[in-house]
Length: 456
Ligand code: MN
Ligand code: MN
Image (cartoon, rainbow, N blue to C red):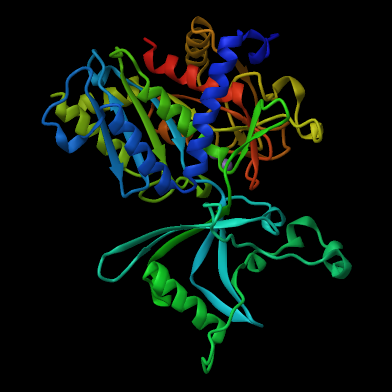
């Protein structure tokens, strides 16, 4: 079962390629910190590579490159293969939402000369990790007239940042005796955005100053928060991590490292594949894959119906066959082995940064509950594809038995009767404001995904 570390197999030239790919990925996660930003950036990349939106086609033929966008928050791209669509798809699916803090609908308040924004956290966060770090606001505000205001505050180096305060150690005796889950309570994750009064205002001086500023600079008013989507995320760019530059520190590797590599795989597909290739990027995985833009949405099935109609495969059986015959890699991150916390893993079945793409036959918790658990024949098919394409891979479980657990979107596509295997990138500090991945793993994931889309 011995496997070579990915770095050990690279020539000097390949190392350069791995670092260069890492730079392109760093640019992507530095720019794209919300699902909307990923969707918009993905559309630009797709257009650059000759993909066109579905409604620009009357019919589809082998080699056509087509994409669908769902409500600005999820995107699905296809390259039509030489075989019938109903012979099955090759699907890469990743999620583009990440844990963060969302503003409440009525967020703004003034308290003892400060202006703060109330939040409700999104996804699984260790709340104490989100205080005393620079944060940015990425938002969209819809006004009653239907117009939209997009804004980002805190990413340009000349921008101010915002943040959440914490107690000084001198006065933290009570706080420090609490259990970690209660150290910072959810209702205390309020973001400080100002401390300056409006001269001569009669009341709410501090609030008035900020509201005037928001109106002048972004043209929205307090009531417009009701129909806004404003995400509080770690500020700043992704950086190289480690003095050898072998890793990347950044926000949102879960799951944008897999989203980017899955997208790049379909963008860089340099042949017309036999089987129709597909990359789908979904929202809301971190809160259960529910809702219109999550993996459980009808959106994906609807795109398949559209593709079948456009390739003149019109029987109900064609749809069922497409699902039955499809193969999917559910591209999501895995918990990398951390030498500071070896006790949560069983070392033979853990994944290690630098050892390549990670396959999780199953995820889940307490006896694999909630897991997709891939069929062994499909795992064998994937092994063959990876080995034939010299892709480094490893296998893992999420922690040792009964240590905890987690899930991905794999079971949702599995429910459609597709063959699905979890395949992703090992991450340290998962769900923390600063997550870590290996450049080698990002590159091996890209290679593995590309090989999968071409596989027969
Ligand atoms: Mn994930
Ligand atoms: Mn996650």
